[in-house]
Structure formats: structure tokens, C-alpha cells
Image (tube, rainbow, N blue to C red; front, side):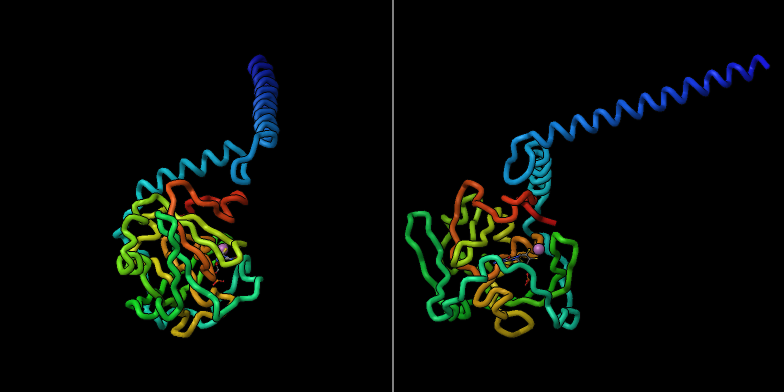
Length: 248
Ligand SMILES: Nc1nc2c(c(=O)[nH]1)N[C@H]1C(S)=C(S)[C@@H](COP(=O)(O)O)O[C@H]1N2
Ligand SMILES: [Mo]
């Protein structure tokens, strides 16, 4: 009998304690949420969350090994119907004849290249698993000029001593910033062919970036201009709250 009373009391105590713990935890959650909502945003995302992304970036860029290749596949495994995703910077009608790749040098000079200029350089293929941050991926086949071959051929060694490359579409509606080790990675291409044929318009004709070490958001279609900087170039999706580094 006596024992049962103690058990009941303990039960009541434990119940109250459980509720108390629940309400305190709930309160902390609500408080954190309110704080976060009022926090100023950096690049489309609350300061605290951006700090988390920046920490990830430091860890992953520190671990990045430029010699380590992304897994590749035989051409036979590449899909025939390649998904089209993202048309920012492609809505302005393309002036095919007038199109040039513009490369801004550190001294302010701008070099211009035609598609034919690009095709004169050695051609490289890559078949890899293209990953979009939205959660889909597909094995796709791309060909073009290795970014590092292009840099070496045109003696842009001073430019690639900078920390970042910035790329944008001719109409400047889509733009990305990429850390130099990733854009100089041996699998990064200035790409002009998909599945052995010229790039379709909505896949970035005449020239797009293919950068297997990054998520899809960085594979800018229809490159207009490339420049170099020690500051992070503006980046379309980073401004909308996504990870700037976007490596995987
Ligand atoms: N100019 C431009 N390039 C872009 C985008 C875009 O909206 N505009 N979207 C990006 C995103 S989010 C992805 S997943 C890939 C998709 O490439 P695809 O259309 O060839 O599949 O392109 C990237 N490059
Ligand atoms: Mo994407």
C-alpha cells in the first residue's frame, strides 16, 4: 500500500517534469525561430544560416583535391533525352552571328572569341552524373575545351592567380561565381556539344560551362563574359539563399 503511494507520486512528478521539459524546449524553439525571423539577411538567408553555409564552404574547399576526378561513365550510359532546367539569361533572343565569348583580363583588356576559335582547341569529353540541387540527377555526355587548356593556350596565367572566376550570360540575367581550384579542375569544360551534337539553344548554345565538381546551378548556359576577381563574384542562386560553394 505504502509503496503504491510513492509510485503514484513519482508518476505525477515525472509527468509534470516531462511537460516542463517539453514547454521549455518548445519555448526555446519558438524563441530561436522569432530571433531568426528578425535577423538581417546575408545573400537571401538569415545571418546565422549563412554562417553555417560559410563554415561548410571552408571545410569542403579545404578538403577539395584538384586531382581527384568525379566518377565518369561510358557514353552508352548517357541519357538521350537530357532534361532542360532553368532559362534565366536565355530569354533574350540570341544573336548567333554576333555572339562572342568575352574574357576580361586583369589589365582591363577584353579578349573576344568566336565558337570557331573554341573548336580549334583540343576537344575533351566527359560523361558524368549531372546533379541538380532540386534533387534529380542524370548521366549526361558533354564535349568542349577544358577550361584549363583554354587558359594555358591564351596565356591567362595571371588571371587564374585570382581567387574566383565570374561568368554571366550575354544579357547578365544569370551569373555565377566559382572558386579558382574548381574552375581549373581537369574535368571543367567550356562546352559546345551535348551527345556529340552542337548544344541545343535551351541547353546553352553556343557555349556553356560544364563543371562536374559542382551542382547544376553553377553550370552556366550561354556564356557571354568571364572575368576574374579576388572577391566573390555575384551569384544568382547564392543571392537567393543557396550555398555559394555548391560542391558535392
Ligand atoms: N543561363 C542559365 N544557366 C543555367 C540555369 C539558368 O537558369 N540559366 N540553370 C542552372 C541549373 S539550376 C541547372 S540544374 C542546369 C540545368 O542544365 P540543363 O538545362 O542542361 O539540364 O543549368 C544551370 N545553368
Ligand atoms: Mo539546378
